[in-house]
Amino acid sequence: MSKVAEIREIVKDYPTQSGVYLMKNAVDKIIYVGKAKNLRNRVRSYFGEGKDHSPKTRLLVQNITHVEYILTKTEVEAFLLEASLIKKHRPKYNIRLRDDKSYPYIRFTWEAEFPRLYLSRKVKKDGSLFFGPYTSGGAVFETIRFLNRTFKVRDCTDPIFKSRKRPCMTHQIGRCTAPCVGYISSADYREEIEGVLLFLKGKNKTFVKTMTQRMKAAANEEKFEVAARLRDSIEAVKSILAKQSVINDTSEQDQDAIGFFGDERGCLIETLHIRQGRVIGTRPHFIPVLDVTDQSSDPREWLVSFMNQYYEDNIIPDEVLLPVDIGLDLTKLMEAVLFERSGQKNTVRFATDEKGRSLVEMANQNAKAHFEKYVSKSEEKLRGLDEIKEKFNLKQRPTRIECYDISNFQGSETVASQVVFEDGVPSKDNYRRYKIKSVQGANDFASMSEVLSRRFRHKEYEDPHLIVVDGGKGQLSQAIRILEEIGRKDISVVGMAKARTESDFQAAEISSTEERFFLPGRQNPVIFKNNAEALHILVGIRDEAHRFAITYHRKLRENTSLESELDFIVGLGEKRKKALLTRFEGIQDLKEADPEEIAKLKGFNRVLAERVLLQLNESDDEQDEKSEPEEI
Image (cartoon, rainbow, N blue to C red; front, side, top):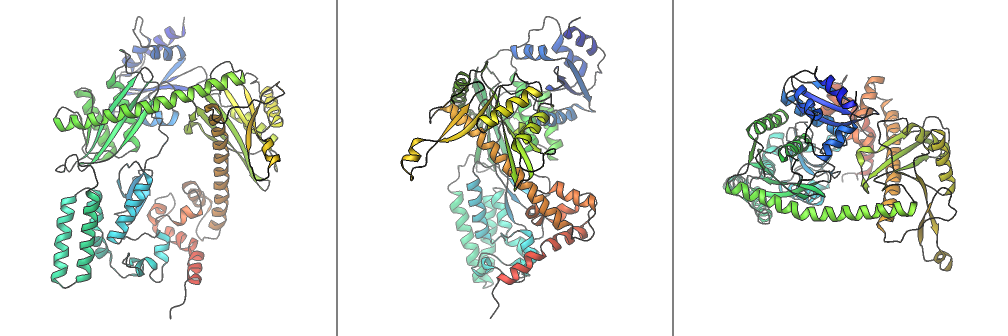
């Protein structure tokens, strides 16, 4: 009996309720995750005889060796679980969002006693208000600076705010009301910065009307400084608003319009973000495995899958406008999924009205423009990979390249990084970090041996088409020996090292280097042209591996420093220290944390959280006192 027939028999006994199915290959790796209202019928559809599947689905079925499932109470729960499992396992045959760029949001801690503004690249359910996403971190910083200056929002971190004994320079130049030393009450402070909330929510008419009323009231009470400050705030905000693109100045809804464009080379899905009638930016998502010209490809299926993944980590607007009709059942289901995540009613609809169609058309136009850019970049990367294949005499195009780097500090705490490039670009979900366990002191050869042995014990990881090691012939021969010992002689490996050129010896002021690549069994190194895309890919992965290793090493040192400081805090046992070390990346991260955030950890309460922050910041307080001049 064939494997497909065997699975077909097993599926006959599957339950008919909702759930998620996980399709696995011969090495027990999840290669596809799907959700279903009726598990038996859905999974059986893949293995039915005479099914007219797309080439992608046929290839998927050929690689399936067994199928597992997880039952859920409702179809909505199946949607939610599917998104989290795709994010965790990154299955090969799923439509996946591969956009590694994290877009900036403005975080407003409105729930705090004295709120402030931050730039955040993650939306957290911590009670704060989030606005965005925006396309430029620089623009977000400028907006925050503008709001801080206009509305006198405090810009100090929470630990510094709590430790101040007298006003800082920001207050002295008239840009802060000094809530840190009690110069203004919480109620008055929140009233002062209410305009920030109105501005960020896009309630511009309400803002101008409210601020004007307060300005006139202050003038009537002869509080001329307050009135002047409000007047300046109104004028500054009007100036900013005049520069924004207005789509509908009567709308109070937050909207996302989704558009797409593609061909057999892939598809680019664009999200256009409209907040209170104003376009704040667009966000492209290029999916190379999605062929929208394939007649067997159902746009309803991949569009719903996209929304399910995208709105797991991003702000859910009041309304999502779609370029195609996904049907009443899927619409209601998607609205239920978004409600489960946001806690409020959201509308998902096919844009049929004039304003909705114009927004979707704008998203489609942006998708088309960005598509050409992404395809051009992708094709350039593929040409670079083909040059690597030719130069290194590889059997196939190296679509997956792995690079390893060893890092230590004065011979101790040796760590290693594993960086993966797929199709010539970083695949950050596949990055791995290793803390060396079996090697004492600085021994890069032995450390590399441990890393490669541990890496290839993971059968669920895809095999690389090429391994790049940072170093010359010595490191290369070591890597070859290690791969032979672990039975992976089939993996291609190359050594990469810099070499001085003759110009360095001819003129001391000229600093020129050239990358050389050493291959097994070849005496002379391989050299690429300076402007070759192949060289850019290889240098990029080497530099990224080095950066990733250094970052991990720095984090370990910070954790060691944090752990030593936690030893001096009364009331912290090993479990509580472990909770802090797990939650916070380093000592500075913990010092800047909000007490409520610490109090939520297991074993903590508000009192203990305050004590931790107080003792950690005592040394900073003493330093601040010494650094400030005495009052005359």
